[in-house]
Amino acid sequence: MEVRADLADAHRDAWTHLAEPGSWWTGEQRLELAKTVLGAMSDNEPIPPWGSISAVDGRIPDMPTAPAFAHDVAYRIARHAGTLTEDWYKKASEELGPLPYVELVGIVTTVAAVSRFSRSVGADVPEFPSPVPGEPTGDAPDDLVDPELNWVPVAAPADQTAAVMQAYTAVPSEFQNYLQMASAQYMPAAEMGDPAWMRREGGLTRPQTELVASRVAQLRECFY
Amino acid sequence: MLSWSSAQSGAEADLTAVAAGTDGVGFENGDALLRFASATAGDDEAELTASREALVEETDEAFMIDAAAVAANFEMMTRLADGTGAAMPSGAVESQVKISEAYGVADVISQR
Image (cartoon, rainbow over the protein chains, first blue to last red):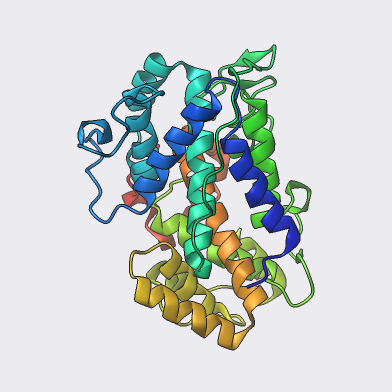
């Protein structure tokens, strides 16, 4: 099976990115959390939304490098995203910190996309790379603000673009990874306003693209 | 986006069929795509395989890969939106009443 180059590159880069130190988590912590997400995505008997995966024997490492609570948050977002509430977010961000929380959502969404793509085309999920040593960079924009359209802080100015476009701007490396993945998987942001856009001749038309998008979002019970 | 783009293309999608996951989407390859998209988000491996093969038979492998990539993108986007508490501006919600009704948005758990 031949996957077009930009899509293969985006997924390979995303997997490499998982293993690198982030702004707030080490590469080892990021990979450990990614493995919890992958387990959540393929869980045949998922725990309920109010459960804690860290309380289930053998589901996270005995001596995790990331807090057990971070694994619980990762599992919940991966498996039960439609059940999240603002009160739940406030508790999670108080415990983890708002920017580490944003980076954690980025880990979840990366693993969700790549693992589901692999399953959909009938391929194995790629092996995770080895963690890259190093401390988190602490990179953050100078001007963080609380937007109207998201729970999480974003880079100023807030609410000048769609909520999903500003959601990761507080963690620049996650934002860049997200843009590359979305461009390869869906379409470049600059093309969003073109109802006739096609990636290539013979590929999905815009309505065909939006049909797939719409159905998946509906089945995930995503209000947005 | 589906309603808008399909209307612009001159072959408006039947949102009721899309929401129900049934045949009758109303444009080329629509029913095979809807079946495949539904299967990618489900747990039935046999149906995923069958729907993938049906889509490849009707189109080609590259087309199926593109469709799988879009589905993967919305596995990403839905968790991003729900995980970061993304909301639509109030005006956007009011302008989409017809679509919201077709999809049963009032019953969606993540409504904020």
